[in-house]
Image 1 (cartoon, rainbow, N blue to C red):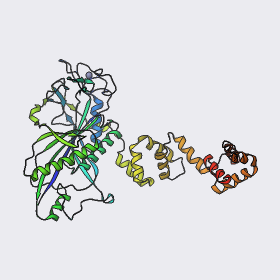
Image 2 (cartoon, rainbow, N blue to C red):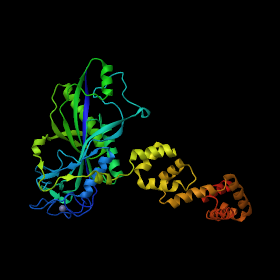
Image 3 (cartoon, helix red, strand yellow):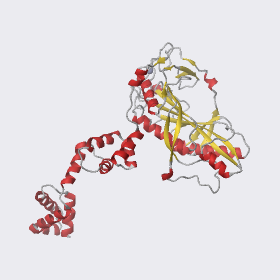
Image 4 (cartoon, rainbow, N blue to C red):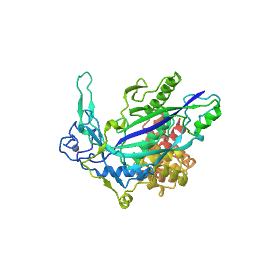
Length: 464
Ligand SMILES: [Zn+2]
């Protein structure tokens, strides 16, 4: 029998949240400004305009490189990637071809399930949550380039509009090794990368707004063997087939769901073609979110089509080790989560929520030493009731410590009810608001060491 194993590589573009654009001083704000208001001769591609490198953007990519354990280049340079499109006023994009800022590194994700296009009978590849294995997705490179303008096509019009506010926005591109084996893993990798960018505060990476865009390369290779258990073993080890198949690219996926669905659709599409004996065409395909299918866009350009050459208007960059060392990063999300679980006994899910929300994490750390409650209770309170300040948290736990025991409170409420029968009568006659007077008397008697809501419920039980 023939089994096909997918080889999937990812390319992720993310706009950096620097103050200004990549090669000019224009404001980096492609979403909130009036169209074409953040432009200048450099980002409009006017002749004679000279680019200047944005240091903040370079340092942002170095931070990401450090976070994924990549090698930061000592020397890097800029190259022109030439192509014509209305959203690219210069006719070329300044990018990095063969000397990227970062090489190597990885991100760790949970290996969800082994994917084969032909499921092998009697072998269950599904792993339960407890059996999930972590796997490293290797990163090939991360480089820096500039974004294009944005084309708008007003409905019903026979013309298009261009907004150049996005032209020249710093764009980071990450390329992975083909280590993901199905849609779910690819989507998880993209999520993990988004979390990292947000944690490092270098990008907002909102996929719906196009701030982060995912492209995938997929090919299927054959594993020919009649022994199903041997095939299963090879697939489990993530081995590729004998001969790599033809690569298809899917562009501009702008949600995690579409990353997952497009990959799984494409694996099935290619499997069906191969089983019918047809050939896979090397091409770029798009993803239709409504129909949930990929569709052919164009035959893939080769690298030669871009005629890369050294950018003559920008100097190469050299970094000293001292400079690289001076760019520091916060503790990484995975480490924070692990410490919260190990040191304070937090549930893994709670620890992850705190890790992803810097404000809540700060509240947890600030109030931890001042509150006598268990750290897990403190975390749960911060996550579920959403207190805004440390004082609010301390007050909550302090008042809880000082509250009277329930049975003592019941005795006091009974006494107040006995002593104030005229108010009780009013309540029984329908004067609901009189209940508040009784609550007030109890609160005075307990000197505030009771919850008003609980007092009210005790009163209601006694009087009913
Ligand atoms: Zn500009």
